[in-house]
Each structure stands twice: as C-alpha cells, then as structure tokens.
Amino acid sequence: MVNTVSHLGIGFLIALALGYKGKRRLSLAALSALPDIDYLTYSAFTLLSGSVSHEARTQLFYLLGHREFSHSIFFVFLVTFLIWLRTKDRRFTAGAFGAIFSHILLDYTTSAKMRIFYPLITDASVLRSTYSFDPLVNILPLLPLLILAAEYMKSRGKWNGKLDKFPSLPDPKGKKFYASVLAVLLVWVVLFPAAKVFLVDYISRAEGAEISYNDTYPISSTRYLAAYSYSDTHYKLLEASYRSGTEKSFYVEKVSVKGNVPDASAYVERAEKLYRSGVPQEIDYSVYTVSEENGKVTVIMSDARSPYVKNWPYFDVVYRFVFDRESGEYEAYLSKYGRTEVKLDRNRFE
Image (cartoon, rainbow, N blue to C red; front, side):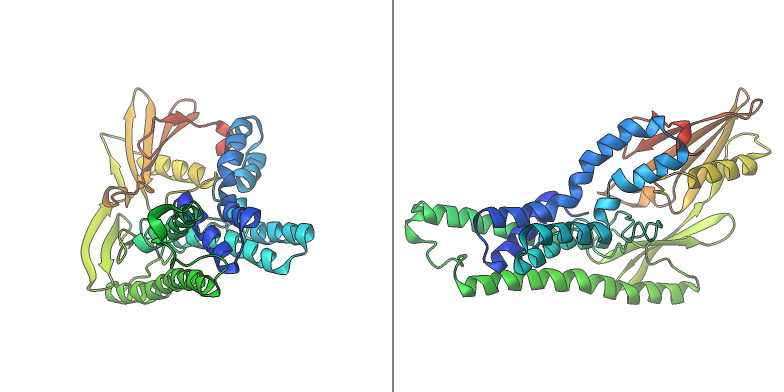
C-alpha cells in the first residue's frame, strides 16, 4: 500500500511530463488518487451490508469494498473511456489512464489483496513484491510537490532568483526530467516482481516445497517472509533475502487445544468453513486455538505470520467463533489491527 500523498505526486509527475498546467494538471493528480474513493463507498457498504442476504452482501462488497472494484482493471478502462467521451483529447486521456493505472499497479505490488480482474475473476490476488514503506516508491513521488512549491515561489519573486534554473513546466528539458523520474519509478516497480520470482524459486528448491509467490510478504526493501504447510500439524515460516537466501525459520502449530475438547477438530473445521464462505478473506495461513467453557466452544482463528511482521499490521486479524454445543448456534467476532472486537452479522457467512 502506497500512501495517498505519493499517489497524488505521481499524478502530478504525469501532468508535468505532459506539460499540463492549471485544471488539467490538478485533474490528473486527482485521478491518480481516484481509486481510493472506495473509502467512501465502503462506508456505504457498512451501512447496507447488515440488512441484505449473504449473496447480496458479497456482491456489494465486490463493488463497494476497499481495494475492490475501484482497484480493478475494468475500473481503469471504464473511467478512461468516460474521460475520452467527455474530452476527445487523446493525450489527456492517455495521461488519465496512466494516472489511474499507476495507483492500481503500486497497490498491487505492495501488500493488500485486490480483485484486479473483477468482474471476470472474483479471486483476490496481489504481487507483494514491493515493501509498503519502500523509500523510493513513497518519497520520490513527493518531488512534484516540491517542484510546484518552487514554481510558486518563483512566480512570487521569492528567494532572490535562486530557483531560476529549476526545471519548469514549459521547458522541454523540464518535461524530459519529469518523464525520467516516472521511468525510474516504473523500472523500480517492475524490477521487484521479476526479482522476487527468482527468490521464491530459490527458497522453494532449497526447502523442497512449493512456496506461494502471492503469499510471500515483503518485510523490508530486500527481505521477505514466506510460509508453507510443513506437515499436518505445523507451518514453516522463513525469512529470506536477496543477499543470503533463507536467514531464519520458525515452526508454527496449526491447532492448539486448551483443556479437554475431544471434538476440537470438528469445531475447527466448522469455523474454517464459515470463514471461507464470507468476504473479505485476509487470512492465508490459519492457526486455531480451541477452548470450552460452560458448554460453549470457542475457536480463535488468526494468521500464522502475524507475530513475525513488524511495522505494518496487515496480518493482525483475529476471528473468534463461539459455538453453543447444545443448540449448535454460533456467534462470530472480529478484531483487526488491534482495534476493539466487533460482533459480525450472521449474513457474513450464510
């Protein structure tokens, strides 16, 4: 995930490279942040989701959820087509496409899952090749904001002419400068997915196991956290880097039972089935803790990688299912990113 200000910066870079001023420059910047309009649509989803059927809730989530429809390729082409109908300006339309697509690409290469090919494919995926806090990806796009601030100071005659040689908008050399910055960003973003292919292949061969490319998570600019099912009872987690391959490894138990719950596996299976029937699905490597008290069986479900990821709490997602042994009824709760636990509506799962 790249911060919104950096997304805006890339939109400004595209506008500067194309030589735009005024409203069109601002328009391209705004378009680069447009996919994050789903922060607003998700609010609408939360208001509607509890009063519809399970199937309707799922489809509403695909359309209104964060990093869902507005982060799909179809959304990019739809908005671009509407802009073309409105402007009939090929260059501006191409710039608009680049601004929106850059947002989708950067989010897709970082951490959060997206349904990038929705509605053709509803499976979520992500490259997870670029670190969410990568300095170049997050800081370099801020350069246009400094450029615009410098141009503003020049236009006001500030700083006693010290910025006279600063790349300016009408200057062809200036346009090349901005285009070069965009090229550096593009190469950087494309380089990591390609490099990650070789790293994942290397550690897969070293482990003699199939390591998931999508689920290998960047924990720094050059290091990744990978995981795979080592046995019926344990996952194996690996910290690997481009420089030295696997550096650390950990074994995580899939199911732990507190006390005497003889049918714990049946409740784990039921919790897993419920979870997989709803959206979103944030957990890739499920671990369970099962306990029982006063005729109620509690299954806590989380991601095996959560304790091993610092700085970005993407895997800090905990589901708690409470099953009444006598009636068979259940309640479900969710806690994300350390926030207060909330009770989930029944239509989330069925």
